[in-house]
Length: 227
Ligand code: CDP
Image (cartoon, rainbow, N blue to C red; front, side):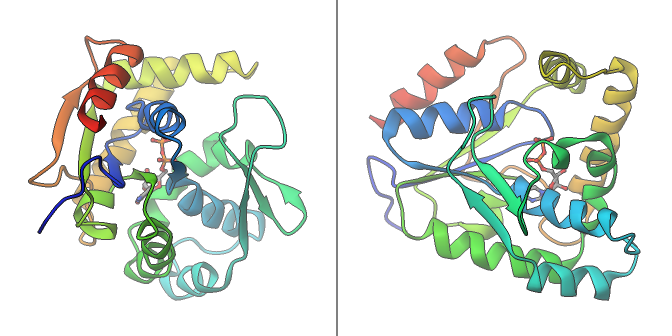
């Protein structure tokens, strides 16, 4: 398959809190591309299900929800660190869907085949327009296997938990490092062992371990590959 250079479709995958969103956002800004964080879609479905006390173990019900939910992703209306507004009905859920209850449950619903089909079809349609940096777990393997550049951003669980801890504290919320570490490990385990579209690096992905290099260094390295 011929790949475009400079890359028009960039897939960025990796485990929880590996810095994908930070890198994806800066990269999209630098290239003038659309930044699309697919995790917000799985989070939004989980948030709605929790709000309505739906049974998360009921695959049929949750799949129906994913097929019909109207999740609106808009340009950011506030300068509070958000990459976009996520709106459900008339409620801005941008930060609500990042809370602990969503973190703890999102991997359950994202393992469902029907949920994945419904959401990945929408992601693929947007991605194929090009000039996009799409971030997730299965972008390079399933959603956009034809991506021109695939990056798999990794880091140790401890480093990732530390980053997530500082993110939460910076927002002014309370955080417990050990609890975050436990949840990160649990979520990665479910994401990487699920039957459908498990988290893994595509064979043709460039794997970057961000444990010992700064976010700026990772960005410089990736931009060099794009220009
Ligand atoms: O920001 P963080 O890395 O913690 O997570 P996220 O990217 O917002 O994704 C939340 C969850 O959605 C993941 O743990 C996966 O279970 C699911 N997800 C997925 O299955 N496939 C994607 N393409 C994106 C997210």
